[in-house]
Length: 276
Image 1 (cartoon, rainbow, N blue to C red):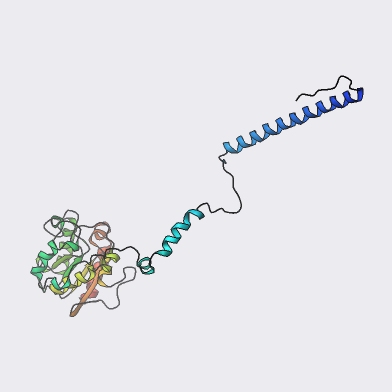
Image 2 (cartoon, helix red, strand yellow):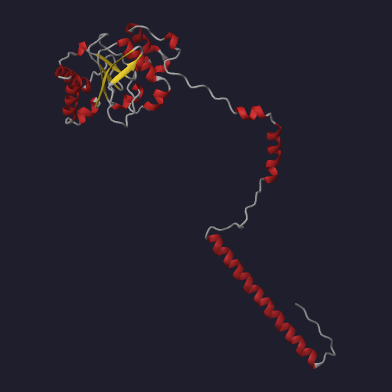
């Protein structure tokens, strides 16, 4: 700041000039202090991660950009907007029902080759075994993990042989089947039922035509029209194509291996079911 005074300035004028200089210096110093304080405050907030300004009322920054899009949507035909994107129809398990096998012998080939039955290749699928019109059919959820050509060829199969012997049967007298064609550790049974696997199982049982059906593993119960969260059905019959047969649920073979105490419950269930 530059102040000029006339050569003939009076003493009062000189005093006023000196006062003006001091006032200007104070103002300048205060501005510097405020600037430093403001810079320090901004630096503190920036260090705290707050480097943007906020307002209580939201601002729609994209309002202008959306107008052309909204206009284009309004211009589109209403029917096209309502239709939405096309989605492929889900594949029904079993395919065309008119081409389903009509005998147990035909079922074996269909079980290995029908693509919709199981995502596993034919080499991983395991055939059911046993005679048609058997006195007893045993149904398990899936084959054992190491099964290849023979269903229940491992530890679970050995346990089943012992159970059947206690019931008074040999393995070759019993029709043995799995609900799914290949080992499936975690199956979504409710989804499989909704996709038609229950109908395939009912057709399978109708072709086998057993006198009794013993299901080892309640996971498979949705395919048989029963809620697995409920207890044993009050009417233990399975209604299939053209008839019905007595039905009993029991713990799965792997559960029986892990908890031998369940064998007693299975034996009692068998005696109650058969009336022996």
